Image (cartoon, rainbow, N blue to C red; front, side, top):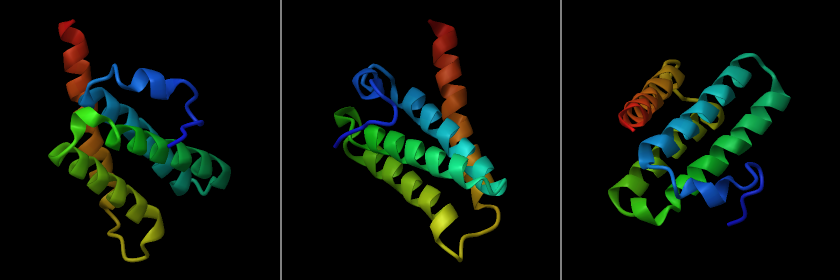
Length: 114
């Protein structure tokens, strides 16, 4: 799998714990949601591509094989549903952002302990 959008991030990604990886994914998820809500197609397309790349980098990290990979891929599926499923619930974006907020908080707590 070639990862070009984030440059050398693929090389550094392995140094991050799962909460840091998912917090970074969540940042791109939030950017994608905001661009979509603003009807900014250029920003949306770029953020969507970056978010999917980060989902893929995280899901292919060998440390998370098993139940974590399934959860990562399920989150990716829900993320894609936001934009490509006509029957998606109106509050799905808020729920997904809350989901990723927990990872950001965990990553911040871990960073504070260092």
